Length: 288
Image 1: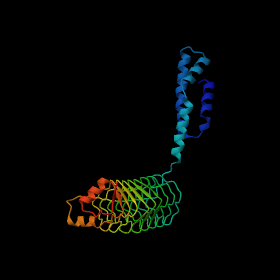
Image 2: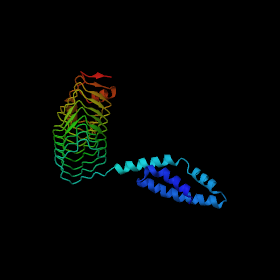
Image 3: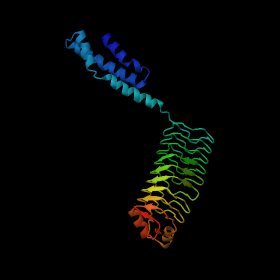
């Protein structure tokens, strides 16, 4: 192959030496250009013309190399975090980045995840009692079927986070926005929600007896088939909220709905109409 062409190729790829995928691209391109150069020479082109036409056939290769290098480096930085079935009680994970981390069936009691980015991670079936998730990013995380007793979620990012079937006694959600979060089939009688907002949250089949949601905001939330005796929504905002029983309305369900405190609450017309049809006490509600 023409040495000038080899030198040109080396010059283009020098800034990316050591990047595996870029080296593979260089080897492939080297072979293709060698064949192209031979074809041009066989067609009667002189050295200078064959070199010029071969280089021109590459196009804007530098932009392609840069894209490949950036992707390769990004992938190389992504380390698989697998702590499943590990004894990690009282561990310090504060501020770490562990996307799609695996913490399944592990002992994590008292561990500190404050400010950590745990996007896509799974803690399924683990002991996470007294853990600190304050300010952590738990987007797309699975925290189902585990023990979270007395864990803290202050200003935590909770988007599509799954808490179904988990033990949440003493858990504190403070100042957090829960978006499309799953809290189905859980016992929330001893869980604290303070200054939170709920958008698309599913409380289906959950025991909320005596729960206090005063002053908080609910948009597109489902309380279908949940235990709602004595729940308080004083001064709360409710829009497009569902309280379906799932069955023919019984006297027991009517009594549960009638026991809910909506004093000072603000709600949209559809939510109001549905609750009115279940004979809820809405005498101190503002309809918007």
